[in-house]
Length: 416
Ligand SMILES: [Zn+2]
Image (cartoon, rainbow, N blue to C red):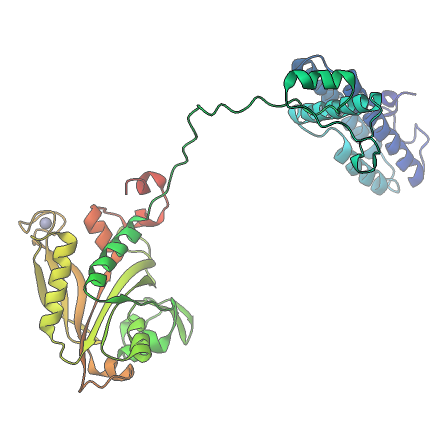
């Protein structure tokens, strides 16, 4: 009985009644498949298309949903197996599916092509009396010549093993493949630009942890227990004593403890707040904090420095305006606005017709904050400011949605 006939009978009809017979039956199917596959290789298709056709025939014969050998096995042996034989038949069927030509025709054709090549190499070396095992061969093959004609002669005379033919040398005159280069993210560019201005003024860059203690984030900065910014709605707590820092200001205290006074630093970095993402809010954003401490620091130094900074960044025509404000860690505190860079102060949509755009907070460092950092407020005074880098980048590049910075859209990013 051929395998085609067998797969169309049930196990009972085949008189298969125990597990061992089921295994033997499936082994027979596997052998039949391997034989057909080997046959395909030995036929040596004369062309790619013929090989593809043979592979497709083999695949269809075994795997076609309708009338394929495997679906017949499923239909007649597995589904109709007795309760006792079902588990072993199921296992065997799964094994069979693994070794059977359960693959794309293209894959199968490739495999057959490789098998053909290796069997022809074997045949050639056997013919030439050369073993494939170079290391123990007393008469190793002659190295193949790199000259094509000489090599053809070598192969013909059997003095060298058949290697795949030498590919034609690459054409060095062809243009190369240009790989696109990335560039710095617009927020990083803005940050570097701001850093550059302060580095030239003699400040240096300091950094600190993004996972911060409640002490450094709030207590040491004179932010009282009752302050609304400590609320769960504004701050992302990791536990009752640890937060994702809500600003870069904790690094002020860390730097004061580490270096003492005098001190001139800027602190760029990521901050986190419990904000829903929208056009002007992101739960993660970037700040740059500035801190200057010396024995004779005044509010005039603060004004002069920030005025210089604004003109360096936005152009010489930009004017600055300071208005009183309140922050727990500075006294007095101020808000800095710049004259609108879009309308020059005439009033437009961006500045809401006021001619001014508020860009940062600042103030003289609160004496208690100095004390918390181990500095004597009788001897030293200082000022600080904080600005949002993302917001500055939005202003500078005229971007109206902060989310664009964090969506990794290459069409957006390649513009910078
Ligand atoms: Zn304007």
